[in-house]
Length: 285
Image (cartoon, rainbow, N blue to C red; front, side, top):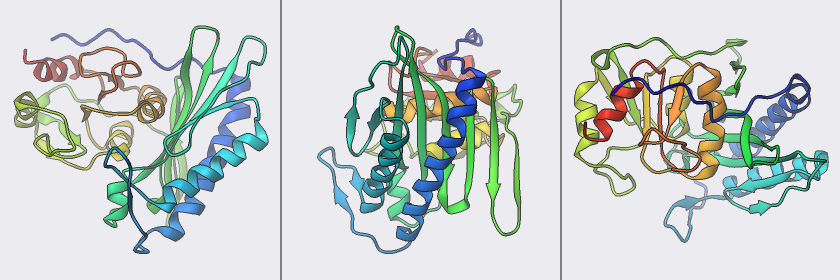
């Protein structure tokens, strides 16, 4: 299958919007980190949602704090959070904004003391034709690292006692599946995954395969650590935050059919050159 033509699902962001909203996005990330980390490695109580997925007080409290900040600073903005639902945006002329919040993406990682859980945040804008993401973050509290992305580019920021930096982030070049690193959240035969033998064909075609997924898989692709990340089944609050980061880093993100992942809630992320080949295998070509 040829490389799909470049289609951006992230809308452009203006300089004024970036100046106003990017610092606030970083503030939301910092706030989530400050709530989550004291509860990490603490034998926190685990509840099961109606859909069978786990949730903890850390998930709920982190989203609650972020929502309070948004309400205080941008009361007209909408909010769509995994834990506390939807607050509708109010119009400001013809433009509306909405924040998408996934306080702990990879709660199974969090509750098993893995460091790969993350926080997903996106800002969407509706110009009259529906909401589209314009700015987002994939952030990992345990490592105090984040990547902020928009259609205009992506920036990786690390802060710890040994090293601190902020620099542009980009996908790495990969022109051959046989040299590619593939990540997934878990193996396709697991009950939590949706997949079949076509996924195994892709696994058999790459150089390295690891189940180090959830949002970390997209972080890895966007920072040049891996070449492919595949998720057969996602939620809207996942996809909205993944798109600006992957596209800003120069990569491609589509659904498993090659379509709009915001409508077909699944994801194939890559640096782009092998994207068509990956889709072909997943579609049985």
